[in-house]
Image 1 (cartoon, rainbow, N blue to C red):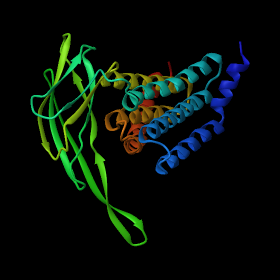
Image 2: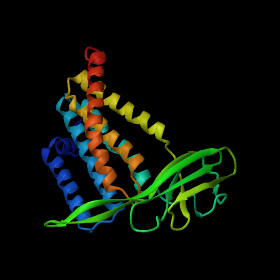
Image 3: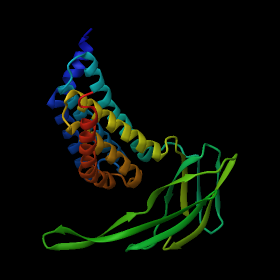
Length: 298
């Protein structure tokens, strides 16, 4: 039986105005970020949320176009919502990781950080202060129990135009990154610094976070969601663009998980969005084609 609340939700998703509002919010947030009104972490969180909401809205709207009863409308709404949720999990883990299990500074080879037992999968947020003001780099090697982790942090310089005919050198610091590690079974674990080379200005700063949903599971969930949307599109003669946008959104979220950090979020998200738009869309159209071949007549 139809309800006003459900009918209102369907109309909101089917309306083009909803998508225009999300797009406008994304543009406003990017503008506020470049005006230094929003912090890197907040701007990245809001921008990623807007991108996923827009993708979920588009998928739900496209699926509603081929919906013919209340059941198919519910499926369209649920799949659109799942696009948002599945993309938000890696994004939130990256930009809002929460309270670390352990935090410490490692200056000399042999220095270690004790980590309490919290499951086998963790993520390390590694930061280094890089000496000087020009181009420089820091290379490090950590051992998490028996898991070897190597990293490269750097500061790059590039020419930037600041006025008519005036150019200057601008530094871009990529001094923070995540590392995924698998810890051994046991009550306590150690993150040990094996080497620290280059131009560090102080010790290596390490924070350890629990990784409740490891990256391979996120990839699997993304593929299952793309397949589910593909099957619905194939069986109901829907628009294959719904599958392409689902795959693009998942690609965006997974790449942001790999590239972004709380202190360096917007640039990696823009890059993830560009790659996801092309690579994810191509994968999505392939999934749509395979789904149509397999399920179009079932």
